Length: 220
Image (cartoon, rainbow, N blue to C red; front, side):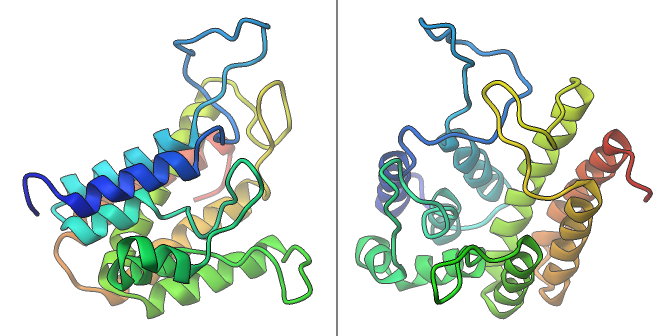
């Protein structure tokens, strides 16, 4: 890891542009900016990818992993215009090594006919890609799931029903038991990698998953 990385700087720039005016499904914290029309304040998607990237960096991973963490949703999520990014386009921007990490933590959204895939099918495909990908993919996945579990548990503890639509938020695509299954499955998928940097990440994710299960009423 270098003091200043042009690769990471480029990844930040791409992520900020790609995710501009796109948002998380909900929020549990108080907003710092009030919308002038009284609309609910939403959390920018950039807050999530930044948290994931900082977690990866704090866990001791290098520039390519940190860059991939900033970009981990770029292939999976459309921009504000509904455009999607291809691996080839991202490769031209940041190189193949970063793209291979991003692909390892990207789930397919649609089938060959353009129809939405079922939630479980998408998650099983994600797990297959994670197991087949590089070790840095495991780090990005653990950081991603850690922030998701933290946000979900914090929302539930704050009285926010994350499983139902509400003002300024969209319901999660699967219920509490399915979400818990996916957290545990992602944890298990990373165990094929024995890098010591993954141990603390798994432990911390396990703590947040337990907090989510308690808040959601899921039997451990």
